[in-house]
Length: 202
Image 1 (tube, rainbow, N blue to C red):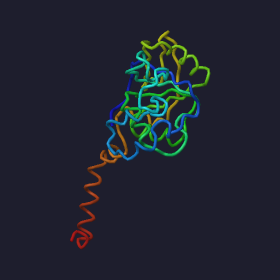
Image 2: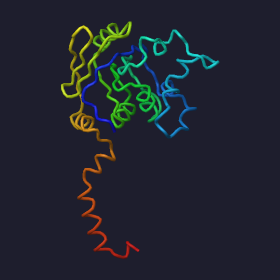
Image 3: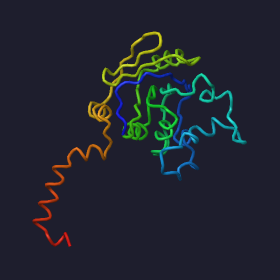
């Protein structure tokens, strides 16, 4: 998993509440097990018309927001079914941090486990950041070490995060990486198990 320390990027304002995982990545894209290429399905029904052409009025299709690394969204982002493809698709599009008043618990966990940082701020602060993101080409800073978001105008907003989650993100440790940190102890355990129960080794 790619480590997250600090992100300097443009932000795309998605001023919608209760965005569920089926809207983030519709079910027809869940057959794919490779994370790369999932960006094509991201917000598919919002981004494309029935003929598969981009809807020019949808914010993520507007040229000033292409390449944004931060998303600013409404309340209860990522609700609905558990779908690890949702953070995968967002990250494949280029999003590394999402700022919202709240996140669904499962989406929040899936995001943190994959290196996507969900930042919770009060609604009024999210509204301020949403306003500053309008028009694109404005640089936002999300600093995990200092737990701050800095807006283009220089305003600083502080956010909370579980210390263990923060440490894993900064070190780039997913569940497998965390387990591999204990490789020496695992090797010793396996050696002792083989000596004490040789019949299990065949």
